[in-house]
Each structure stands twice: as structure tokens, then as C-alpha cells.
Length: 248
Length: 224
Image 1 (tube, rainbow over the protein chains, first blue to last red):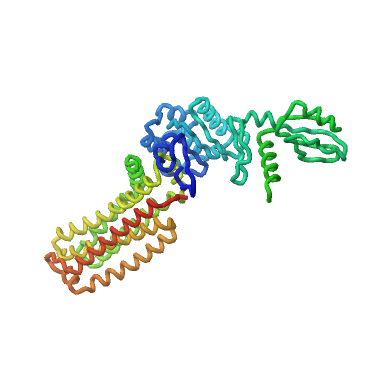
Image 2 (image 1 turned 60 degrees about the horizontal axis):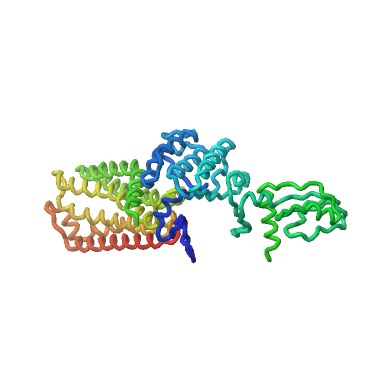
């Protein structure tokens, strides 16, 4: 967002160079960060006027609609807002300018379940418009699973995996089985032993195939369950696999 | 450079400091009026109050307008708007300079007018006023450069303290010059050459500091 200049290379957003055309590019971007703060002595209405003066695309009717949906009062001073109200105010200021690209950094952090639902519902309305994109960064994989089409996992500043949400959920499976202590998992691409206790084994598979169960049975194991994994479990497995593969 | 954005940022900061600016404006008027009352104690209190208002306004405006946005995390909000680093920097410097101009010019104008208008005031005293007020402006500019370069409240306060100490030395030295002391007590306005030299130096310091602040702020690569 122009706060840090790159040491090398270039940044292009919505088809335009960020460095040389920062003002024009930012007309198309709505950025929200959990670290962002508004001016405490001023009201929500003042902030709306301030942002409106910089965005010709500002939609006043939509802004008022959001005020009602989020349960906010225009005259309310920022100083007296709760965390949830503050987040919703900032999202209102971002959404009402109708940007092509929304960059949201931890928008649901610290929100109560009702506020979280309100925020996610509004974001889903935004992505229903095919001309708009949300880049959503979060540690809350439940939210990510709920609203994302495409997901990238980042661990220690490094991209460890990237792909479609449905592919992740389809391809990743957890297999619980019984096998003799001398049993070794067959060499199948993507299959990895996660834990073992006596005859119980838990494996994860990131490239699920229909004949997996029969291959495991043929290797001498008794398959108990093959179940879908949640996005959080997929993330943890991906990161741990990545760390194991990474030379120390 | 986006002039519309700079203008909006400028007005936004001016609006956010409106209450303080009004207080400094009032403080400037009152202190200037006190300096002209024909009672040695009261006029001295007025003079001290005037310097205090000028110094306090400088400290507060630099702190509030230049440094607070970073510590209060509102800068991230502003930088998320369609403004470039250059727009932001130019907006900040111009609003700080303008905001300080309000109490500074109020006090300068009131003191000058009252010196001319009040029957008991010595008209000659008017020649020391620009020297004193430009010295205050110089101090403010040096503090501004410090705030721009370091973005540190600590360093800016150190420079403020140094400027205030120097102000005492400056006033003592100024009134110790026989020509200036004589001009100050005169009923007619006489401009000693020492005052003219001093004004030239002060103006040069102000222009130099302003150029330094603009160059350094606009050449900044990062705001975090």
C-alpha cells in the first residue's frame, strides 16, 4: 500500500504499476488491516465524509445500507466503539468505495460470533460480483474455508502450497487403519504416516485416489475410516510436511 | 503528485487540530495584550506567556500532526487511501507549517499592532519583534526537521529543550547589543543594521530547514 518500497523488483496491482501510479491504483483497492486505527475524536459520519471526498466511486446508498446492516450509528464517535464496531466501521469505509480488489488482513480477528457472521455475510455478497476479488489473509481457517475459492498457505514467510479450496478438500484425506507392528505403509505418492499407537495408524494423503483403500488392504492393513480433512488440518499437515522436506 | 489528495489531507489535519489551534489563537491574543499593559510585572508575565504559547504550540503541533499518526496507527488508514508517499509527506509538512502560522502570526501581528497603537508603548520596540518571532520560527523549523528525520518523540523533545535554552541566550544577547537596546527604547522606529543582519540569517535558516524537511520527507522510502 505504499508504506514500504521494494528492495528490488516491481509490484503491479490491477494491471498497473504500484510505485509510479500509487494514487490511481489505490482507487481500485480497498485495504483493511487489523492494525489500522481511525481518528478517535471523530464520528463514523465524519470518516465517511472524509473517505468519500477521495473516492469518486463512493456509493452513499450502499454506505447507509451497511450502517443499518452492521448496526452502526453515524453520529457515534470512534473513541466509544467496541472492537467489533470499529472493524465494521472500517469495513464499511472500504466496501462503500466499491473497489475491484479488497485486501483484508485478519478482518475477523477478535470478533464475537455474531459480528463475524455479519462481516463474512457481507464479504460473500461482495464476491458474488464476479468482477471483484478479495485477497483475504487470516489465521482463522474456518473463515477462509467459508469464503475462499483459492487458497495459498504461507509458513514463515514462504509459500508452501497454493490451489483451489475444493481441490484441497477433495484431495486431502485422513486414513485410520489397523496394521501389525511390523507393517510399513506402501509407497504411494502423497501418503504419509502421521501417528501410530500399537496397531492403530493414522495416515494423511494429499493426492487421494479411488484405489487407495484396496492398496492399503493389499499391504496387510485393515482400513477403519477414510475421512475428509478440515482446512486447518490440511494446513497443519502441509506446513509440517514442508518443514520436514526443507533442509535445515 | 495528487493535488486534490494533498488538499484533502491538509484540511483533514487542520480540522483535527481545530480545538488546539483555537486555544493557541486565544492564548496568543491574551499574551500579546498582557505584554502591552503599562505595568512591568504584568507585561513581563505576558511576554513569558507569549513565549510559552509559541513553544507549546510548536511542540504540540509537531507531536500531534507529525508523530502521533505513526504511534496511533492512523497512518495505515491514511495510506490505504488513494495517496502516494509524496502526497502524504507534502500534505503533512504544509499543514504543520500552516498550523503553527496561526498562533505565531496572531502573536506577531497583535504585538506589532499594540506596540503602535497603545499610547504608552515605545514604537521603537517594534524592531525587536520580528527578530524574536523569527527566532521562534527557526526553532520550530529545526524541530520539524528533527521530527521528519528521526520520527522519534524523544529526539524531537531533546531538540525542543535545546531550542528553548538557546532562546534565553538569544534574548540576553539581543538586548545586550547597545544599538538594539537603544532602538527598543526609542519613540520612533529605527532599524539597526544588527537587526537586519539577524533577520537575514533567520530567514536563511527557515528556508534551509524547510528545504531540508521537504527533501528528506519526500525521499523517504518506507513509512513503517
